[in-house]
Image 1 (spheres, rainbow, N blue to C red):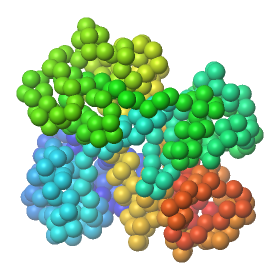
Image 2: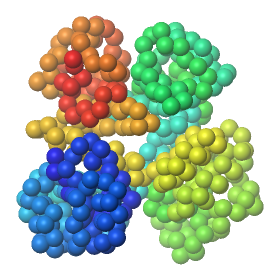
Image 3: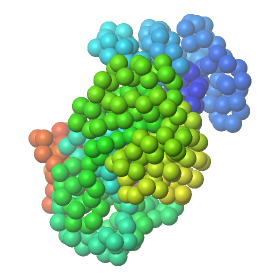
Length: 450
């Protein structure tokens, strides 16, 4: 597919490289020559220097031939207007980054009239992902599928867990729940395990289930932690605003530590139920005084990766609490993981998954197949499909389906209810099905069949 990305910041460049890796024809547009030149020099993307509101510049980028147009500049207005212009010039699908809450909320209902196919807010999406993890603090990461009816949760098996040393089939019986072990990450390798695969302490496991079943089963295999009820957040940016609002609505006690006085006043006015402290959240004496030892969860959301890494590691030294750090740098994130901090989150990776899913969905003619996409340690993907009438496996029991290697059907939702697949289960039209696969660039359900 031909893809045009305007605005080559961290989000735009990360998206360009990922789509290029998936063999798409990628053109980037930015007003800064050095930015475009640097990306073009180290990759096979095409580059155009100029304004995304200049018709001649967009024509040079061949916007009229674009299958997907992504506006990722730092200005919401530019993103909206350039997306409208691109659609008028012939782009098939347009997507705009809209970060300001007043724009995002007011324009969401007008996107069809504007000709914008999707608007995305990185800070909101990141906040919702953190909120999902906090529902189940044992999780390193968590994602929902089929409108919340199905979850895929990443957990680490500890030495005290009764499933360490057990084959997957026996571990599932011991958990005694409606769940499936979908992926195991051990060191640098990933496995889509069969029933005789033996789990080990230290393994990262991805479990497909419902929230309710997972909560019950995790108690039996000693991976359960109570939901966080008292949360400290360092940094008062947009992610904090959206996250605090979500947590407060769920009855969670929220304390925000922010160094900028003006921003503290804004947060205090907008989040009246939160406690806002104007102080340096990287100062250990401040953290100690504000109750870092007693809090159920600690989240580092400043604008500086290194600050988030250090304060998160400091927080994790105080007992068994949930600690999350926003870190944009992948090398730094991996380093912090090795130092013992499991949950690192990057808005760019959250949005990259979202936009790659958008591209893959529109690689098929109707654009309706893929509902959600989630990367698993860059080694596998979890993809939610809606089963349509063209699926060649309709009505055939799974035990008779010839699936490709490294493919697993983890769960399905039918008529609003979750079904854990067995060999006798067959897929019906309109089912929502979660597939975990090591097969690259799957765009439609038939591609999982041999």
